[in-house]
Length: 429
Ligand code: HEM
Image (tube, rainbow, N blue to C red; front, side, top):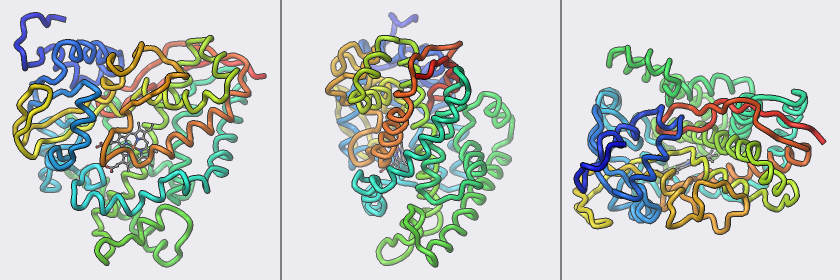
């Protein structure tokens, strides 16, 4: 990279370009950029074309420092994920604000703690334990289908994609028959991840995109309005019942907030958990010694889970904006500045992790920031870890050997990414 001639604060244009290039996240160039930034400019400004400038935060300590100061660094004042100027303008036309929905991630105090408290207890291990039996049943039937493939499969297609979606829909209380509709809505809303879809969308006018996004949100709202009505009349032991009946200051949530709440719960847990699950199998399939180690020591499974979440770090970033002038790492950050928290870089920070690029199931401690940090720390972290642990407990004892059976392909996306194709071969005990 031609980086020698750059000034102190500014991130070289070629590196800034990788940060906004979905392809760089698919072919691992992003990790070259992160490595360079951590060593040479750990808190610099990127000015890629078509985006407002933003600070790029690549050190573990700075990510934590910003994430814990929730009054000084807000989630909701500017787009919460990296958004180009044209898309932000479209979103502002629809909602009047920088973000399309108003879920927990797009809230700050005083609303954020109130809304988070509504379901926080539900996501804690003590409550989730009730669902462990059902999650294990889903894991067992998923594993059975994989083993029936007869020694080879695409782990993403056959296991990692469907399993977390099925678990969250079950926990939320969405009937199995509606899962394809939910998946489609999620993909249409959040992701022109696939480059072909993105091209189609880019070819549309701002008005056409606005109409499309509004239609998707209206569809989500209509779907969950029915669920809400049902759960107010017939409460059940599911998360939809908690959301439908939750009250803020004595009243039910406004409908837009409620739809957003359903939406984040329905969507935040699939691509993320499936990418981490696939990451673990990828790491074990390419390293027979690591596979043998975990097979011989099943007590390493929780470590395998944490290490794959660190190593893959499916959520590459969230954005913050400064509410006042401040200083960090010798930099003067001005009120209103936009900051990109690069979790995937923090999780390879040489000052925190020994041999950061290596996958080690026995890594201890493993203080990764893949779930974020501070007030917005992932609400679903225990659920994600429970799902993954149970799947590996059910799968690994059946496998005598595991290896790659072709090229692994990653999704092209700068927000959430992970393997989209993971061909493996396996022998069964
Ligand atoms: C928040 C990552 C699984 C629900 C977050 C944040 C990250 C993250 C980085 C922080 C957002 C911020 O700081 O602005 C992940 C990863 C997962 C995962 C890597 C899987 C390995 C799940 C699951 C659910 C979930 C299974 C639930 C169904 C949420 C919610 C928030 C959140 C509701 C917002 C919390 C708040 O703003 O207070 N997640 N997540 N996540 N996650 Fe996850």
